[in-house]
Length: 157
Ligand SMILES: Nc1nc2c(c(=O)[nH]1)N[C@H]1C(S)=C(S)[C@@H](COP(=O)(O)O)O[C@H]1N2
Ligand SMILES: [Mo]
Image (cartoon, rainbow, N blue to C red; front, side, top):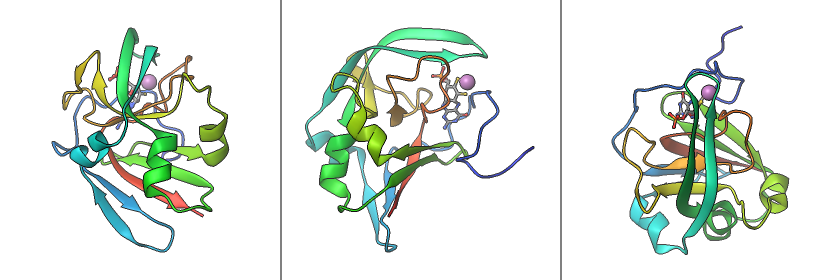
């Protein structure tokens, strides 16, 4: 079955064509308030690095290990998300996304947090690599949650 819902299961076929050259993220809060978050906004917050990350594609194989650097989701939430949220919808302009439950963010091992990554191996992510990319270090069997070109984060109550 095909669907245009970015949060529904996706063909396991990574998109090689970046939808955007702009790493800014539109944050949509539960009551419709909208906030534009630039790469500079992400970088002023404390950064977190996670080593030994792999991108496991059933299409073109496994790449890594990588060290990804960025803003850990608990830190993102603390700065940008009012209390009372249940999940985040983290979506790319190419129609690919992942739903992240509040409980997953809290339960993640402290050394392997979800990341809004803007760096890889000590340098910035290129446009081809995702600009700002959701990294889920615990996802080891495929890479269906490792959303490249994060463009929108919707906060759900
Ligand atoms: N925005 C976006 N992110 C995406 C995808 C995509 O099509 N669009 N494909 C996913 C899939 S299926 C895989 S296997 C990995 C591939 O990541 P890589 O290009 O870094 O190897 O990206 C994931 N993230
Ligand atoms: Mo994939």
